[in-house]
Length: 181
Image (cartoon, rainbow, N blue to C red; front, side, top):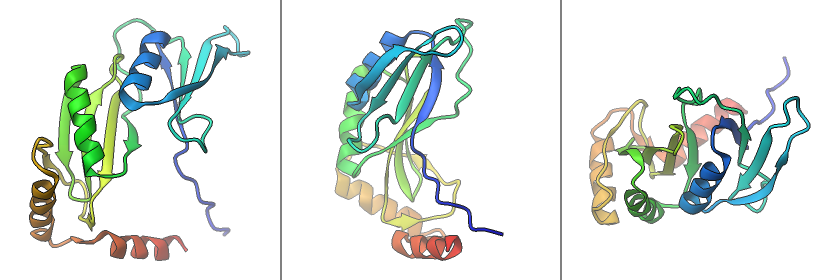
C-alpha cells in the first residue's frame, strides 16, 4: 500500500448570507485581504471572494453567496487561525472584546492556547497558538488572557505537568513524525 501523501489544511470555504459583512469582519478582525472577488461561472452565478493573510497562499478563506436566510448555523464546526505566540493571542483577545463578538471563550488546552468566538453569521472561529507542551486531548480550562504572559505560561506548565500524558511538544512532534514516516 502506498504512503498517504502529506495533506495540510490550505483553506476553508463556506456559504454566506451577507458577503460584504463577512469580508469586512475577516479583514478588520483577522487582518485578511481580499485577493479576488467576483461572480462564479457555476450555475446560479454566486458571488465568490477569496481572502488570505499569507503571501504564499492565494486564499485561506473562500466565501460564496447563497446561504439560506433561515437562521440556521453553519455546517462548519470551526475555522482555526494559528498565530505566532501568546502575545499575539492577548492582542487578538483585546480586539475581540472591543469588537463585541458573540460567545467569546478563551481556553487553555495545555498544548495550545485558544480563543473561540462566532463571526457575524454564527460560524465558530478559533485563534490559537501552540504551547511548549503536549498533553492528551481533549483537555481544557478557562484562560484569562488579561494576565501577563509569564503568569499564563507558569500556570500552563503547572497544569500540564500534573497530567501523566504530558511531554515537551518537540518530543511529541518527533513521535508523530516517526508514525507518519
